[in-house]
Image 1 (cartoon, rainbow, N blue to C red):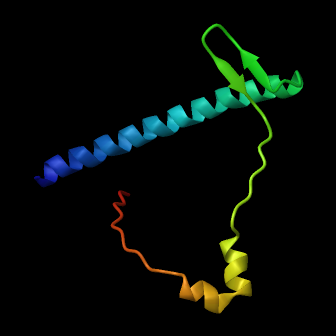
Image 2 (spheres, rainbow, N blue to C red; image 1 turned 60 degrees about the vertical axis):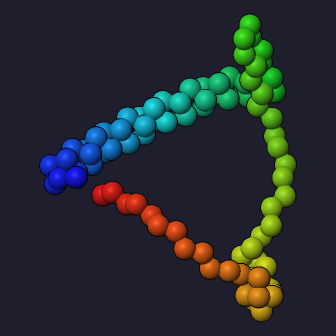
Length: 91
């Protein structure tokens, strides 16, 4: 790939990322409107002709690796493994 082609590819990637960010922001704004409406109406579920929306509290449990490492450092080290990946960063 020539320098000119690489520059075009990077510019296209930047534009697509900007567009994706704009779409993400727009989707979040719409979701926030829906959540506000459902909260104000004290609803957990809404149904339309071809859609269904639920907005419920979900409780879950997760392993607290940071606290485990703090309280059981030797055991955490015993079960920790290193991995390698390649990361593409475009600035």
